[in-house]
Image (cartoon, rainbow, N blue to C red):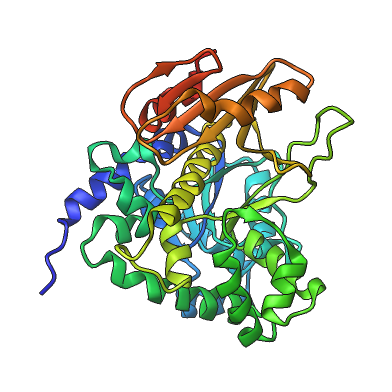
Length: 397
C-alpha cells in the first residue's frame, strides 16, 4: 500500500493558500477560474457554503441543464441557505442568468462559482455577472505557499498540482490527468471534432512550451493546417492549459522586435507528462529551460493573485537579442535574465545592457539564478531565485 500524506496535512496546506483570506473577505459573490485539479473545489469548500451544487455530478448536471430555474425554486424552499457554491459552472453557462436574477433581488445571497473552461463560458455566451461577482484565478501551488515544503526539482519535473505534489503517488496521476483532459474537457465539451489530430498537436505543443509561437513549424510537424493550429492554440488558452506571454515592442524604431507571443504550459508536470518525460530523465540544459518557464509562471501567478496589474512580456529581435522576462510596474521597467547556473559573472548581463540601450526608458537589470548569494555588479543586480520571488512585490531598484 502506498504511504500517503495525512489528509489533515493536505487540508492544512490547502487552507493556507494565498487566496483563502481574500476570498473569505470578499463582500460580493465569486467566480473562481482555474485549470482542473488546482484545488478550486477544496479551497471553496473551506469557505463553508450552505449549499453545494456540483455540476460534475451527471445527475445534478442533467437536472439543472433541463431546468436552470430549479435553482431559484430550491433557494426559495430553503431560505436559510445564503451561501451557495456551484462547482464547474461552465458546464451550464445559462445557469449564470438565474444567478444574476437572484443577486439582483439584493436579498443577501452570496454565490461561490468555480469553472475550468473560459472557452465553454464564451461559447455558451455566458453572463459573467459584471459588477456582481469578483473574478479570481487559482493556479497550481506556488513558491510562496509551499514554504519549507518547496522542492525546486520536484516543481520542475513533477509539477505543482496539489495532490500530485503532496502525495507520494502523485507522479502516477499525471498520465491520467492528461487523458482526463482530452476525454472530459475536449471530447465531452465537443471543442474539436478530430480528437486524434488534437492529441497529436498537444504532444508537439508541449514540446514547444517556453518558446515563441511558430504556427508554420507546428503545422509542418503535425501535418495540420495553420488555421486549425491557431484554433487549437486558442483551445489551450481558453481551457487555461497555457499562459501567453506577449512580446515587448516599445523599442527604438531601428530595432525589429518580434511580434510573436511565447506560450508556457500552466504546470510543468503536466507539460512533461504530455511529452512522456519523468523525473530523472532530464538533461542539465532541459532543467535550465524548465527553470526559466517555472520562474516566469510564478511571476504571472503572483501578478494575477495579487491583482498587481503589471504588464509582463518577453523580448526577442531580428538580431537574436533576447530578454527572458520584462516586468512593467507603474513607472518602473525591469529586465530579467534567468539562469539555472549557481555562479554568475558580469558578462551574463550583456543582453540586459544592450536592451537598455534601445528601450526608450531607464531599465532595472536583474539576473535571477540558482545560487544563494546576492551580488551587485556594475551592470546590474544578481539575485538568488528565492530572494527574487520573496521580494517580487517590492523589487529593488
